[in-house]
Every structure is written in C-alpha cells, then in structure tokens.
Amino acid sequence: MIASLAFIFLTVAALVQIIYIFRKDASPDPFSHYLSLAAGLFLAVEIGRRSIAISFFAVTSLFESLLLLATILALLGFAFRIQHRIKITKGIVFGVDICAMIFLAVASSPLAPSDILPPVPALQSAWLVLHVAFTMIGEAFFAAGLFGAVLQLAAKDEEKRSSHDRFTYTSIAVGYPIFTAGALIFGAIWAEKAWGVWWSWDPKETWALVTWLVYTAYLHFRLVRKNTGKLMPILVITGFAFAMFTFFGVNLLLPGLHSYG
Amino acid sequence: MKSAIDRVYDSLRSVKLASMLLVYLAGACLIGGLIPQGKSDSFYFDHFSPFLARSILNYGLARIFSGILFMGPASLFIVNLTVCSFHRFTGELRKEGRKRRHGPDILHVGLIILAIGGIMTSRFRTESSIDLSVGSNAGLPDKSSITLVDFTFERYPDGRPKQWISRITISRNGQEAIANRDIKVNMPLRYRGFSLYQSGYSMTTEARLRDPMGVPFVMREGEKMEFDGGYIVYMTMDNAGSGVFLLRDNSGRRTVSPAQDKKIGPFILDQYSISYTTGLKIVHDPGYAIVFAGLILILSGAFMIYIQKLKRSLA
Image (cartoon, rainbow over all chains, first blue to last red; front, top):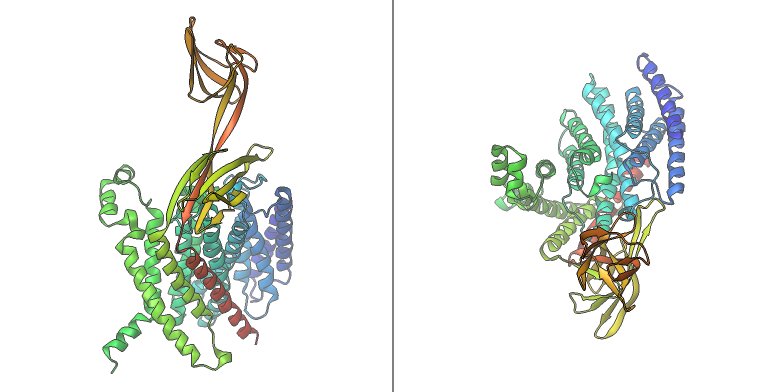
C-alpha cells in the first residue's frame, strides 16, 4: 500500500516532467521534486516498517533491495533539484524518476516476492547490511550518471555535451567510492565472516568486479583523454548495463551463493 | 632524449596502460562470469557445441582466473599500479602541504597490499572440515582438541532456520583453552591463527526401545537388531515424526511405524529422539591480516579522495 502510494507520486511527478520537457523553457518544473521527496519518504517508511517486523534492517531479499534502490533514487531526484552547484536538466530529472518507477515496478512483479521474512543465518550480519546499502546507494548515483551519459551522447551542441558530462562525472565520482565500499569491500568481509573465503569468483562477485573495473576505467580514461568524444558516455552506459546484469541477470540466469537476491 | 630506462619507467607508470589493462581485465572477468569455471571437461561438451567446448578448454577459458590470460595482465597491472603510485606519491611530496592529495596514493597502496594478501591467501590458505555430534571431540591442526558441548538449531515460527549454534570447548595440553564458546554463522571463532566457521549440520534420528527383559537400548538409522525368528531395522523418521522400521518375523517382511509404548517384534518402543551433528570448517589463512589491511586502506583512500574533492568544490 505504502509502496503503491509512492509509485503514484512518482507517476504524477513523471507526467509533470514530461509536460515540461516539451516546453521551450530549459528549466525543470517547479514542484515535481517535492513529489519525488514524498515518494522517497513513503518508501523509507515502508522499509522501516518491514525492518521492525523482522527485527533486522530489511535488505535481505530482491524486493527489499529494489525498494531501497527506488527510495534512494527518489530522494536523489529531490536532492539534485535543490542543489545549485551542478546544472540539472529536465531530461536528467525525468530519467532519475523513471528509473525509480521502473525499479518499483520490477519490485511489484513475480520476480521479487514481497513476503516479509526474517533473515536466514547467512544473512544475519551487519556487514551484509552495509554491503547491500552502500551498493544500492552507489548504483543510484550510477543510474543518475547513466542519464547524463545518454543525454551527452544525444546532445547536439558542445555546451550541452559539456554540461551533461559534468553531471555524469560528478554522479560517477560520488557513486564510485560508495559502490567500491559496498559491492567489493563490505561484500568481501561479509563473505569471509560467513563462509571463510574473501572471494570465490562466484558469478555475482565476478560481475560486480566487471562493473567496478568498467567504472574504474572510466575514471582513469578521463585523466588522459578529452571528454568530448563518445568513449566516456559509452563506458558509463556499459558500466550501468553490467551493474544491472549483476543485480538481475545473475540472480535469474546464473546460480551461485547470491541466489537469494 | 630519454634513456631506455626512463622510457620503460614512463610506460610502466602510464595511466593509459592502466586504463587499457582495466578494460582487458573487465573483459576477462566478463568471460569468466559467463562461462562456468572449474568444471570437468565433459561438462563443457555436454553444455556447449563441440567447437565452443574445445575452444573453452584449449584457450584456458574454463579456468581463466588462474590462467595466463588473466594472471599475466593482472600482474602487469600490479606492476603499473606500483610504479604509478611511487611516481605520484613522490610528485605529491614536492607540493605544498595544503595542496597535496594522498587519497589516490592510499587507495592504490591498498590495492597493492590486497594483491599481496590475495597471493598469500591463494598459495597458503588451508581448509578442512570436521563433523561433531554432541559430546564427541576431534583434533585441530595445532594438536588441540575440540569438543562439541551442545548444538542448537533455532527456527522461526514458520519453520525456517533462524540460527545454528555450536557450543564448543577447546583443550590444549590437557588444559581448557576455550570454554563454552558459541560458533554461529557470521560469527566464527578465531583461535591460534585458525578460524572456525559454522558451515553445516546434519540430523539423525534415534529410536529408544526396551527388550523383553526391560533393558533399554538405542537404535540409530540403518541399525539392525535381531531376535528369535527375525529382526528389526530402524530406517528413518517420517515427516509426521514417526519412526519407520523394517520388521521381519514369521509373518514375513514389512515396514511398520510403531507409536510410543507399542510393540515391534518382541521389543517395546519408548520414544524417538533427534540428534544433530554439526559441521565446522577450519581455515588457516596467513594472508588474512594483509587482505583486511588492504581492504581498509582502499576504503580509506576512496573516501579521502571524495572528501578532498568535496572540500575543493565547496571552497
């Protein structure tokens, strides 16, 4: 119910944003970010409710991970709009909200059962909570960077390309250390505590490493190349595609220790 | 004109080289993530076309992470990282104190230390398993003795597992070194360079019976007890919690599920009970501390980069 309310808020926000996209005025609309904030707060309440029900931070299933990701994206949509350091275009605002909606839609599908279940022994770990939470926060920034990269590729003039590049780089630069901490470091520590091995080349671990390597390559290529070409945004889009395959594709297509989501 | 040594040094510390190696390693990991690793040869022929299976095996793609296609470039990456880190660090030291940024240096050194720890772990890590039932003991690699004092299987109301707890005692040279310590999943016991993990359990059921003289005895699953004219074998416990016996007597051979205080052959069933055997994994990893230190340095460096960028953007 609460998640459905959040979805409605995001839908209304997206509809408003679509209207403004077709307006000649370059500025985003003046209020859809408050709807995103409301959606994010509703989702946070839902996560809190589930956490209280199981006496553990509710990030132990695919449904809960998607809920967390949508929460962070909705709140990011608000945060991007109220800050003034980086120019935020209508396309980016819309993209971040649509992303949150997509993740919520997947969460409501049969792929992600929404049963409120307390964690099995392997998931009862603070490191697991840090691993999932930081990974989701990092990936939310990568999602924002994705839209910046897409708009950068689609831009017809240098000024717009440069503006979108600055947004993309900022998103990736913020998300990268958080994702590094979550996906690799806290994940490895949790694996050692639970199973006695830091790294086992499990498909999920391997694909998380692929994702990290692509974003690391992006950040290093930026040191040696001009940012006007297509390589940088293509790397960002590729990195996000791999992040999504790590999240969904591995669970659904490749078995391993991470099968529970 | 730069000397040959200078040119080699510049090549080895090149960010371009690092970027290309990162892309290559991502590609290698992608292959390793798509092709199941470490399976038998017949697995690949069963699951792929003959041409693909032969290619996977001939080019080392079935064990890519331990093969030259991965280890070679990964080693070159570590060399590149080391030379680049040295060059960068010495360059930063020449700057005025407030302008120095050591976040990337700490992160890079963390990666190097992680690589060293990883090599030590992969070369020298040992792992063994022991199964213990309550009251039994086993030897540890350092000649200590571990005894399972108790095993608890906690369940949620819906029957799902909540926790497996092995309460153990460790003795060394006849003296108690560790008394009544719990080992749970995600809470291993660290002891004299070893780590003991709760890795599994098994369950067996027992049937407690009395013979015609009233003498009690216990039958475990698969055990046989003979009597004049036949025998009984205790097979297992069914889902309803009743034991299943194979009874052979003058009437023939059949399966029976006697309730408490009922006869089976000449014996009387007292009760059934469940006994657990815990599975503990014992790991000795000389690289543990180094890997952990590397991870902490990477974490610290990554956040230091971020905080320094934030400070500059807010200034």
